Amino acid sequence: MADDTTPLPRRRQLRERTRKLYTDDFTYGDEEIEGKRTFQLDEKIECERYDLKHFAGLFREMTGPELNLAYLQKYGLSIPLLFRDCAGLGIRVPSSNFSVNDVRTCVGSKRVLEVMDVDTQKNEEMTMKDWQKYYEEPEKERLLNVISLEFSHTKLENYVQSPTIVRQIDWVDTVWPRHLIEAQTESTNILGDMMYPKVKLYCLMSVKGCYTDYHVDFGGTSVWYHILRGRKIFWLIPPTEKNLAAYQEWVLSGKQSDVFFGDMVDRCGRICLNAGMTLFIPTGWIHAVYTPDDSLVFGGNFLHSFGIEKQLKVAQVEEHTKVPQKFRYPFFTEMLWYVLERYVHVLLGRSHLDIAENQRQHIVTPPQTHQHLTPFELHGLKSIVMYLHSLPSTKKNVPELIRDPVALIHDVRGLVEQHRHDNPDAAVTGRPILPAPPPLTIAERERLRLPKKYYPKIPKSEVKSSVPRRRRTRCKRCEACTRQDCVSQTNVACHCGM
Figure 1 (cartoon, rainbow, N blue to C red):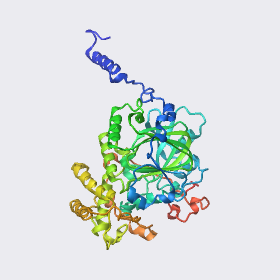
Figure 2 (figure 1 turned 180 degrees about the vertical axis):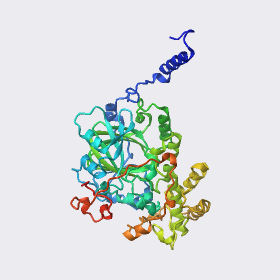
Figure 3 (figure 1 turned 135 degrees about the vertical axis):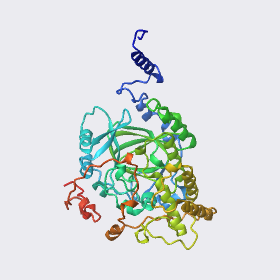
Figure 4 (figure 1 turned 90 degrees about the vertical axis):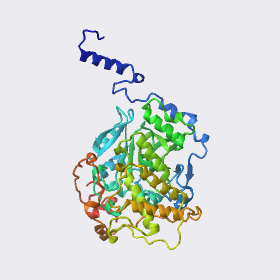
């Protein structure tokens, strides 16, 4: 206890210590205690309140062939879609005996992973070699979870292909300038080495007992999950205005470890996925995930034209909740500019990209007859213009490839005016407004190699040096190395690590 004879600096120190002990709802300072859950997760797994029988319409069960472009043009991607098997989805995944050791072989032992501590929901770093060792240990001192291993441009990419519908509508495939994608060489997700939003292919490796608290996927992306091994339990909450507002308040409260967010909303359904199942989670859906058994999952995130308004809403929630840039969709605002440019190019025949004509990703001839836009696209384009207009000048992030953003916005307004009376039924054609470009030949890849002045600019504060990668040769024996589209044919690396 301080008295009048205690030196002033010491008195201040004691006052600060006293204030810390008796404020903030008795927040503990001990790192071993801080962040741990105070609710019983076992109760939430068994609680009848979350049984899907109480929530009709919370998800839809489909077969692969039913999920096509015509379905999205008519209904959008508004509720979770469950597929008992992947027949007809166009997914390619490894065989069921594919292991974490195989993942290590494909991405490299030195690949640095972001690993989540399940108790604190905080991230730390670990090499792939150390992660495999942890994963295979029978006794574990703590629960760790890998949910953010993006493996594009690694050998694992040759074993996994996203669903057909995703490849048809993903803005990375249909909108982002192809030469930037072709310029990507770094396999990690260091922002300073990223030429496009590298979020298409993820590998999730979770041990029994892992839990990921409620969240919304970055940038309002939709996501597909395929359970290769193990099981997953999802709690799903629809992205109503009321729920998103409650979610934002819950995040800002800092009491996530004390309050199970599913208890704060009217509709929250629980669904269990077994090996072989695939789940699509649409834009903005708030969800938590529990792992009953050791699991290996493949998936990917994507932005698209059938959920634009919700995607922008989630971006605003991320801004309000101050989500760090490294956990957001890379080049989100730049992507919006490219979306506007692509619609103007395809429908009006006017390009606003500063690229030579013979270097374009896909030269499109304007339609001879009027093409109707879906309400999702028409309202979405207007929302993008309003969103970009609302941003301060320092955050508009106009890509250098856009010659004249003012002229582009003018053309978008004209396009919207032309299509404001479009018939929603006539827009259901099964054909995309923004077609994905065909695969490139080797000659076309060389033609698309543009000067670095065209590459995305990264703030210096966000640039990190990357570790040099060890180059390998093709073994010509493993499954991936014998494929026709084996990337090692271009002398990049062997898929099996030999």
